[in-house]
Each structure stands twice: as C-alpha cells, then as structure tokens.
Length: 228
Length: 228
DNA sequence: TCGACAATTTGAACATGTTCAAGAAATGGG
DNA sequence: CCCATTTCTTGAACATGTTCAAATTGTCGA
Image (cartoon, rainbow over the protein chains, first blue to last red):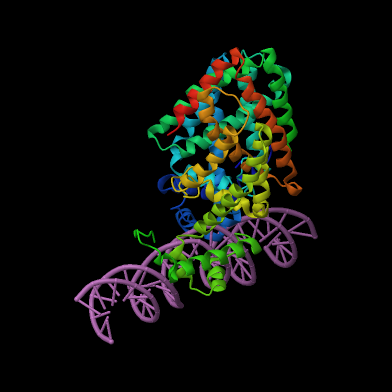
C-alpha cells in the first residue's frame, strides 16, 4: 500500500500487482455488498486468485478493511488541504476538518459498524490505539496540529502542545457518534459538529480566566500522566 | 422464548432449568478459558445438551456474554450500596463507585476486549446504547443519580438533571481506558480514577463562576439537543 | 544455461458459529 | 386417559474465516 520505496520499483513486480488486485477487488465488493456479505472466497474468485493467495498478502479479512480505512484517511488529508489554506480562524478550521471527514466517510457509513466493531478490540491492529496504526494516527493528529498552528488561537504553551491529541480524541468521539447515527445524511452528527466546535472554542478561551487556569493545569497534568 | 403469559410460574419448569444450566456452564467456561477459546460445542457438551438446544435459549454466543455482563452490573449495584450509605461528600462517593466497578470487573479483564468488541457494534443488542440494554443502562445511570443526590454537591438544576448521564458517560470512558489498560492490577486506570474524580469535582464547582456559567448552559443545551 | 533458493500460488482441510427439519417430551382440554 | 398442540431437544448440515503442505513460478549466481 504505502510504498516505502525510494527505489523499490521491483515492488511493482508480479507480487505487488497481485496485492493491489486483491485489495481493489475487495474494496469494490465491500462497497457493492457490504463487509459482512463479502466473503473471502468471493474476493478471491472475483480477483481470479485462490483464497490462500489473498491470505498470503493480507493476514485476515480485517486487514483488508484496515487498508480501506487507510485510504479514507488519505482522502481526508487531501480534502482538508484547501480548507487549511483558506481559513484563518480556529472555528471554521476545526469545523471544516471535521465536516470534511463526514463527507469523505459518507459512503462507508453503512458498514462503519462492522469496522468499528473490529477496531474496538484492543488486540486488533485496527484499533486506533494500536502500535500498528500509529503512523495513521500520527498523521491524523498532525492535521489537528495544523488546525491549531495556522489559526488565531492564543493558548498557554502546555495546553497547546496537548491540544492536537485532544482534538483527535474529539474526532474519535464524533466518529463514535457518527457510527451510531441513523438519521438521513447523518444530520444529527452534523448538528453535533456545528454546535460543538464553537463550544470548544469558547472553552479554550475560558482557560485565560484566572480561576479557571488552575483547573486547566490539572487537566493537562492528568492527560500527561495517563499517556503511555 | 418471550413468555407472553401473565401466569408464567411454569417458567421455572423444565425449560428454565435447562436455560440456567446452559448459562452457568457457559460462564464457567468463559472464566476458565476465556471467551474466544470457549466453543459453543464445548458449552453444550459440558452442559450435557445439544448445540441446537443452547441456541434455543440463547440466540447467539454473544447473548451468553450479554448475560455475563448483566451479572457484573448486578454485582456492582450491590457492592456500591455500603459506599453510598456511608459517604456524604461527592468526591469519595463518585470515586468509590468507580473503583468498585474496577474491583467487580477485575476477573473479567482478560476477555474484556472481546466483550467490548461485540458491544461496540451499534447493531448489537450488547451495545451500551441499544434499546435492548436500556434497562441495564438506566439502572447504571440511576446509581450516578444517587451519587449526586446523596452528596453535598450544589449545582444549577439543569446541569444537575443531566449529570447522572454525564457521569455514566464518564464511566464508559473509564471502562474504555480499562479495556486497553495492560498494567498490573490495572494500576493506570486506578490512577486515572484517583485523579479524574477530584478534577470533575473542581470542574463542577467552577460552573458557579459567572464567566463560566454561559458556557455551562451551552454545554447542557448541546447535550440536550443531541439526545435522541 | 542450470540448479538452488526464495517468492508466490493453490485448494483441500479445518474450526467454529449458526440453522433447521425432524423427532421427543410435556401440557391441557375433552 | 387420549389426542392435539405447544415446548423442547437433537444432530447433521451449512457458511465462512483461516491454515498449511505441496506445487508452481521467478530470480540469480556460477
């Protein structure tokens, strides 16, 4: 998937072609009939390879979904560029990034539950907290770092350094909400984003009130203390 | 399955005995060898019934786990009684309830991941947000209502009425953290509880500062607006 | 070019959750 | 007490993710 290659175009040899064939076939079937209804046999069949061959490249069906998710994240990072380039204020920047995710993820909503189910297992490599997904996670967190850095937000340094991760957690929360959202066009989730973002903004600006400052410090300290 | 009868004390007839036999056998095996390693065949074997019979009473393996979880919740409610009776202050009340959960759940930690995985699927009846688990959820929320009501906490009415649900969410967060916690005796989660509870207390008391009040109202309004 | 080693591919076999048609047991009305 | 009906029980069959030993293909130094 991710070509580590500076050189490796031999990675596009025979094997790499097969790998991509299998993945693209799987993604198509997932989209066409959902994750649950798509069997490994169907994927192999459709791709014209054997079942065992699919397993040679992808350790499990879940890994194929993982690849699906990675693609989504890549798309999100792309879509987000123009927003980060255009907006200066914190609120539209954050709201834009969150809304963009909803847009990109829309086609996946139907079987998001399945994905979530897998991802929720702490032992799964798909878990958003797993080592294996660290690169993807770091990339996501970085988007939020840019949301903050490019904005007009003024914050105490220690809070500011934790904030990207916190906003990423906020997004995880939004995703969780989204997964459970059964309204048309996930209207409810969109409403949540629209209302929550200005609220976050207000909360952050509150940290400048003297009486609030102490609590803020404690919050930051708590967060730091529980990080691995 | 569902006894439509108003009369049903015949529910303790033969069938009910089998049902309990299957459940207790399943729980024992889950405990002895974990959820994943325990097969439906093993449960049926050990209980001296057929596989199909197990399915007659429990729609799926997940439903057996659900029963397991329900038991845990019942235990928690029991264990919590003396704490609620003894303590007056908000902080020890809340901390006590959360710590009690960790104690009760300790034996289940090993396969908590599996449980969580199932529960995370929005379509699963095991989901903490599903209709099917509403009774269990309501009972849990009620514990937090009592944590608040029996305490010295002074709060604006609208916040106070939302707070039980918020504390329940806090517990869901703790559980999530706990599931991922691999330290001995889940030391990290205990540390989280110890530090987070006083912080929650401070945050709640902050809501009396005039400049904070407006934000608090917005938060409450947001929460209300996204509830189904 | 040849042969050895590595990479790839195969498909049958396995494990396990789940279903289902058929039969056995219990129940209740006459 | 007997038959009809419901409840319960069975075990074989099914579906599907996964494994694995063997076969095939590719690569590369001699």
